[in-house]
Length: 263
Image 1: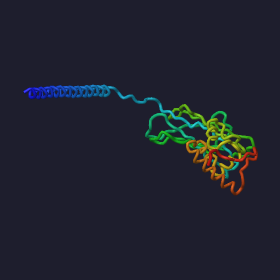
Image 2 (image 1 turned 30 degrees about the horizontal axis):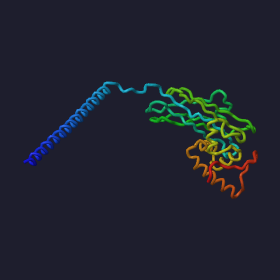
Image 3 (image 1 turned 45 degrees about the vertical axis):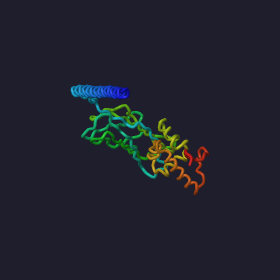
Image 4 (image 1 turned 180 degrees about the horizontal axis):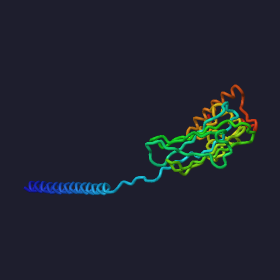
């Protein structure tokens, strides 16, 4: 009899525990449902508030910036009578369905003669674009003596379509003979030194020989991200040259022409 009583007590306690656990589970499930409904309610109120507010939009004027670079140009080793330089222009603002004019002029300090020493082509931002190119064709100067130079100072101005932005100037220097540094612009010169190494006139001649143009020398000199690939190319071309001609020596300094990088 005592065993039977103990057995019934065990069943009773077990049932009580099951009911307690079940109640706890139901309570937790109820709270989870309540929380979910509260979250949905808050989110719905937030969306309602958003729908009642106007979405802010840019209502400012459209500006355009000019690539502010300085280019040193020498025709001594170029078998051409002119070369084309390009400068990037970029809009700050909206796209437009129509072509937009960018106004760039030669400004104070320019010693080269427009129409004789250089000519700027019409510059526009194409429809549905935010970027374009300013193209300036520079002609080989006549009678320029060693050490002399001509300067073209470019200035971006307001046009009927676009206002001048923050970066509005660029500079072109046409030199007789070879330049004495990579560029007069410290940033351009710094980048060129990372890609090409120390400036040497004989190195400059070699680069023009393999890259075919001064513009390409200037462009590659700013391609810091790919400098390892370019330096491998320079090393390969220099190795080919030296195999047939011996070490390439700069006459002015007596230094051997080399490029950065270990291969």
